[in-house]
Figure 1 (cartoon, helix red, strand yellow):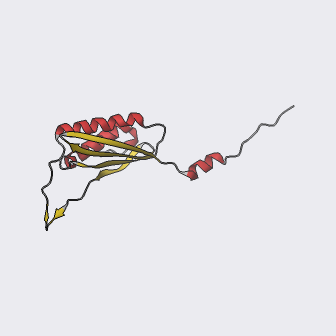
Figure 2 (figure 1 turned 180 degrees about the horizontal axis):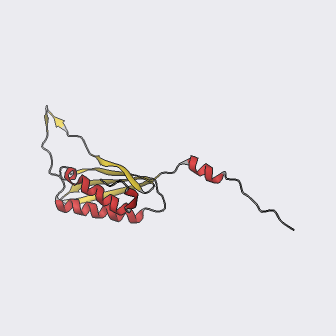
Length: 134
């Protein structure tokens, strides 16, 4: 395992996430892939998906998951989403996905996070003025 993820671009890290989740995505037809970002490094990531539904004392048949083509299209769309990330370094990206009529649909939500305590340090720094020598 890589010890210094910050040596990889965010795009490369997201690619690694999708490779790690590939097997799990193959068993799902809908859900949300999320990545939590701190200092432009992905920490926690995973999948939220609807629970298995039961009715009449039995569980319904599991729908087929994402095909290899769907998973590749999903990964490509997720990587393209990074083009819309602006100057923030902390936050979360959530990719809601579903297969409808054989096509994978993906909605991405980008969430930036800021820490007010860090901002207060920056805004409360005293301003030093040079003494006028004249």
